[in-house]
View 1 (cartoon, rainbow, N blue to C red):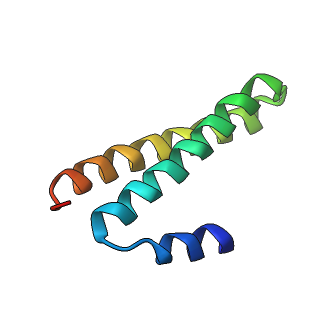
View 2 (cartoon, rainbow, N blue to C red; view 1 turned 30 degrees about the vertical axis):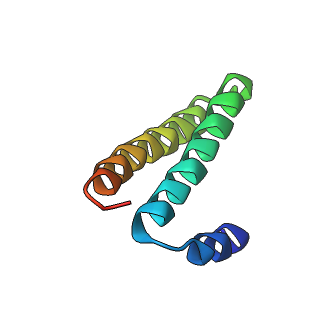
Length: 71
């Protein structure tokens, strides 16, 4: 998060920063999706699924927030 945080703070503009955050969340979702088929433990798989779903909800919230901001 440290490197990502620093990059996010360097992005100028609220909309651009939210869009950057959405890309980061999307990367995490792709990583979760790639990992899930390899996780045999049901409890761990459920945890990763909940984390992925939380990120997907965050992406949608960011999308709505970004749409309300000027370019």
